[in-house]
Length: 94
Image 1 (cartoon, rainbow, N blue to C red):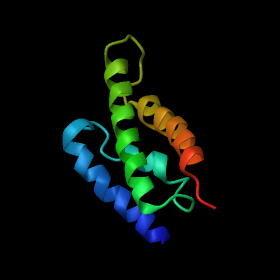
Image 2: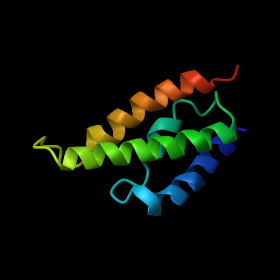
Image 3: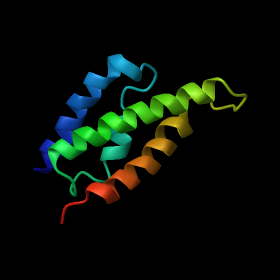
Image 4: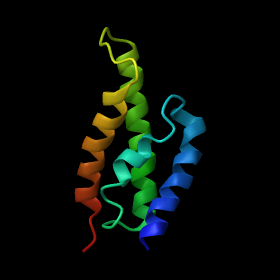
């Protein structure tokens, strides 16, 4: 089960990659890795899709400000981790 939860988000991330996430194709993995054992496969795909969109908005916003973050570390890892944690709390399965 754990392998499926890690593999399906990878496939969903590749589906959302052409749509929105040109600079950071693996930003959805940041959000799903801590929750891999606690959510179902369908929920993990939803989390990856939503986090990919949120990270893309954060990278877009950062690129239009004077904040110096050349590698877009906070817009991808920071926002992906924060919102991934929130969505894990919403979808957690015991």
